[in-house]
Image 1 (spheres, rainbow, N blue to C red):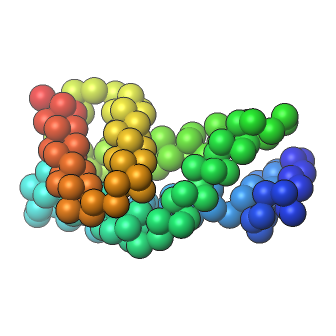
Image 2 (cartoon, rainbow, N blue to C red):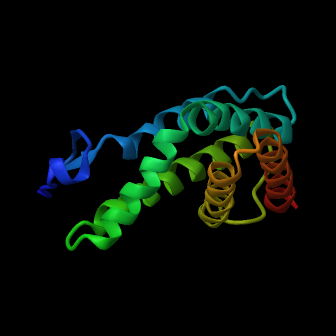
Length: 162
């Protein structure tokens, strides 16, 4: 079991199977998974994925920039702290698992096959989202960030289903 100095990290810990893990690591996962469940068969796949991505963005990025900053700080802290790098890896593995499931479910609901393995698509999409989040946190331009997010989703839907 991993022990983290709570005073140094400045965060509350929760129990996760066989380890203590910062609660912030699981915060993004729940809403992202719920957003996927809102995708309906009757909507075009790009529209469904777009609305899901915008919902997650509005709620978790624009809705709480402080948490986004703290998550990046916590990731960097984990990577720099001996014995804690597994937390950063675990965080990104959960993100990839969730995004993989989202793309897989969206494709199934739309009745299409992915042209790219879902896990590869998820890793690339996560890299794009991470970049957009950092730009938004740095520049603060909400309109540009949403437009860029829509472009990212549009490009990935085309790439994934070509």
